[in-house]
Amino acid sequence: MKITIDENIPYAQEFFGSLADIQLLPGREITNADLQDSQALIVRSVTRVDQRLLANTPVNFVGTCTIGTDHLDLSYFQEHDINWSSAPGCNANSVVEYVISALSALNAPWITSTVGIIGCGNVGGALYRKLKQLGIKCRVYDPFLSDGQCADLTDLEIVLQSNVICLHTPLTTTGPHPTFHLLGDNELELIADDAVLINAGRGAVIDNQALYRQLTQRNLKVVLDVWEGEPNIMLKLLDHVSIATPHIAGYSYDGKVAGTEMIYSALCKHLSRLPTVKVGDVLRELESPALHWSGNRFPSDIYAYVRQSYDILNDDKIFRASQMNSISPGKAFDELRKNYPIRREFANYYLPTQVSDRLKNSLIAIGFRELH
Image (cartoon, rainbow, N blue to C red; front, side, top):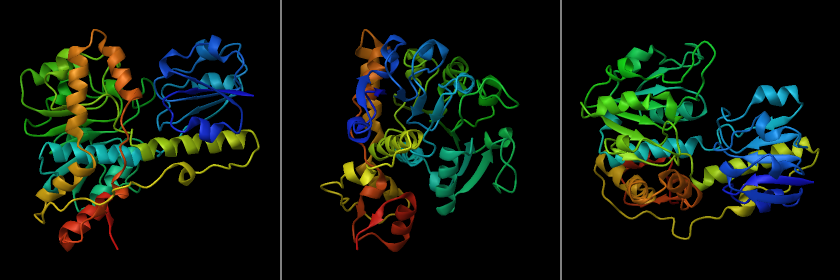
């Protein structure tokens, strides 16, 4: 048996090596010819898996180590008896921590703000629960939820009037509530000039041309991790965005390894085999997990501790330089994702013992650990 795997998936050999021969390839470059002797294909969101890729191959299992499935042709899978699995929730916490890091870097008063969440599934739901733990007022737009599932559901227009707006929807073009260009000129005009707009879902949920027009006329703070047309993004939009990153919000090392484990377990089930590898077998604790003392001011020192574990502005700086200095910005976009440095989640870090109870409770709610 042979398995073709996106080379960016961590610990592919450690998890899948005991099941079959492994072929590692760049995700965007996997072709039909590469799959002529593969029974399983393991990808991330950059690989479009459809009839063109799979026709006349022996592939009978497709796994994506991501939450989203819009890059998979599920109808084709069903028609051709191809089993598939995704990794819902694997990197939800990573994206939540990205949002918190972005708000911290902008010095936005998000602790005392109203936060609007568009899409309250795995990622948006995780953000919503964390914010509610912190006592933050939330507004939620998700037409697929009922009032009984979320007490803060409201209309899209109301959510867009929040101080912070976060998008966490899949990209859909059909159905009763398509998300393609969900935010165009009319919707963007509803957002206040002093608000923060964060898209860490799918790029084309915001009409990037409309966003560019708005940002040439207004001082709206925008954080984009996802871009329409990526990896070939609109470079002129980059100049007007407050924080820009190359689709790495969900790229915490913990989240990526969790996604690998979930797909490994799904493939084992498909093969009627028992899993023998777990995350704990490959993922190690940090050598220096203690955060440095940064003070007890509330809430400003929340930002100081967050930056110690993940400084999003470093990602922003590297990304802008890569796009402006490369003769092939699209290739540079993918290279940054491929070579993204290890980023560990907040739970790997211990708080200093001097932290006050008020500040400590908020930091623990965000995800940090108390040193016992």
